Length: 342
Image (tube, rainbow, N blue to C red):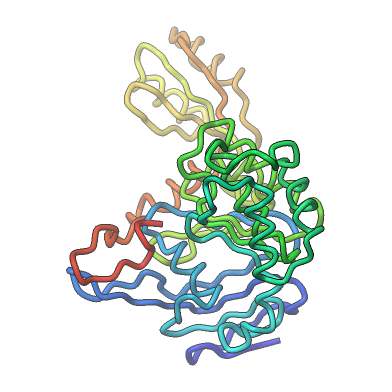
């Protein structure tokens, strides 16, 4: 099918394939440096089910995009659909299917986790029994009687996730959910998101820490300066970039690079180290050692390195210097696109 957004016609798959679709989104803010686009012609598609990572550096437009998806910010141009309903025009038809954490939620510090959720459930009309369900879902059932102020940061964030689940939404949107957490807390949040996705929910999670999301995401969208850089399945993106290279350390890196290039390898210098890949086919580390040893150069270190999303992102942005919009520290009276830099 086709649709027209801001004068541009695009061909898309069936709406049934996606929980979220956005085409040609644009949002401009006034800053001390003049008008700057926080989101600049962005296309975004989030498949139904699974975890979708929405990735990019601080200031790249992630939070602004999420706010537009939730109807909290109006796009200057573009087209958004959530579960086959145009947003914000028909937001009321889908709002009960969406749970989101965009800002740090507030709870009563001297109330227990259970009491905080019970009060919230009453306010939004959710059945009281749902409180026990969501506490179990996020692994807090055994700490439900404890006061909120005694919770670790990771537990507080899991209680926030539990609050979003009170409506039993089909789509969950989390904006930088692991900010400020220690490794244990990060692991807990990742496990919670994975568990929700495995139950059939769609989880859209934004982060500037690409390696972190790689461990849990099925699909990703990578953006820089409000523009799409890459999207698709994590495995496909890594495969397209070349899955592996070798980090090689030798006494004479200049001569070693010449020898390896003559033998058909692709070599990049990184200080006194070499990053070596094959021009075609899988990486053969034994061949690297043989080529160098035959000419009297012996390897000090040879470490196969698996490609990750962070290295892919750095390559995508190397030539264009993409990344933050430079609007993270607005002056008095100006407006920031991402509420502080995401």
